[in-house]
Image 1 (cartoon, rainbow, N blue to C red):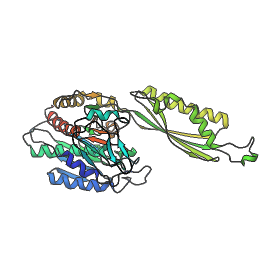
Image 2 (image 1 turned 120 degrees about the horizontal axis):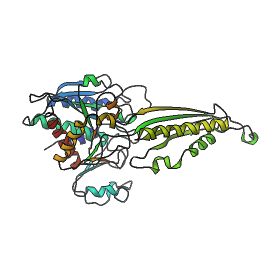
Image 3 (image 1 turned 30 degrees about the horizontal axis):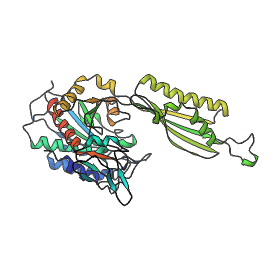
Image 4 (image 1 turned 90 degrees about the vertical axis):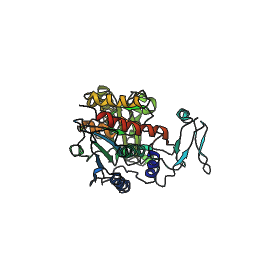
Length: 409
């Protein structure tokens, strides 16, 4: 019915890993290899207004095949894969009818994908899975989303009897490094609302995500020979340790779940003379989000009182915000998705994303954009896998949403 698996296998073989702190956009030129392929495929499908712009965004239009005054809906997915694991020379392997046992990813290196480590694997008994060879990530995050959108467009073009309004598709770079829609032209995209198709268990539908901030800390120490350092040495490393240990232990990511927020140390380096730390701060509730930022500031103030003004320099910057209030203002966006999920046999599981998506930023840029599942699991690492059955359901959801939006007034 759909060719989403075939497309997915083709896309993951292209290395599109993005890079942190790059001075160019997109952050890696190799993302454009997939962008150019998508332009070719969209053109071959017969899509209109196919474009690859200067920033690496791929966009295209499927015109309405009915007379309608319905809104224009968009579907978006990101092309890049995470810097956390290699995306080069990905070797996808299809497992038919998964039996619930250990999957040998790499016999030579004794790398197993086991339900002992990942119990949710057992939820996929009897399904088709795509796995890695244990040396790279797979890239289901988010090439599964691209495959679902492309396959849905191919289906709609091949089946003109399925009525739909005007559809827009968009594929973005650099989502994994937090820059995915930095230059995205929302007015030019021309959609009234959109859906990202980006990860998650089959049946999950998300229109809520973290509020997010980043904290960068520089510590200025004073290096003195340890043999004569009494009363004079101010070790930046020790100050960094003190700072971290003063933050609440149970606000660390490893102690939180569900809607609980956290302060998470992502990087720490230094020596006696200087050190730096990097944190991410996450919380769904806006008031609690502000309290977490205040905690970091209060500890920074205490350190400067203890060790001397100027010892610690703190910069906190907001990164993105919870999209819920932007999307709940447009309830038809949620209702259309619920109807589509139910049409394919799922009661939607509406869970808050413990992360961020391009949709969160787009929602504040004037394009309300909740998220649809793909069936990808264990993203950003060598144990990533994709349920093909879920991917095909996601493709079907895109088709049905396209039809249902065409019926809106």
